[in-house]
Image (cartoon, rainbow, N blue to C red; front, top):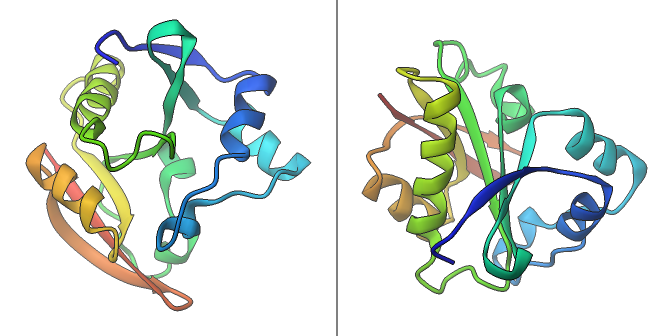
Length: 157
């Protein structure tokens, strides 16, 4: 997984991502395979992260696509920042590969948006991800709820 590259998401990659299944308690990140979900990945700034042997390691997105819509009324997205979202292939989550993956994503986005403050949104129960984000310089900024799920926004200058 040392040699990562970005690749525009095509229909085949989008379908592979939509079919990923995460174990409890991460099932919140499972998607439905339908035209609406497919269009979300194809029509918005989503990028695949490809590893060795063309292995689909994960993806990232930025802008409104990275926001949890329920957070908008609470004002967590009011301050200017580049919203970042990531998804990692469930086959490799929890295996110590997150930092390499996430630092690659941050590096790619910093090339596109130099000197931009970055913000991400994470489910409050996702302690693995929160630890990763803290270890890469993100700090907690805000919080909100969507249904029964609490979310945290984190920022990095």
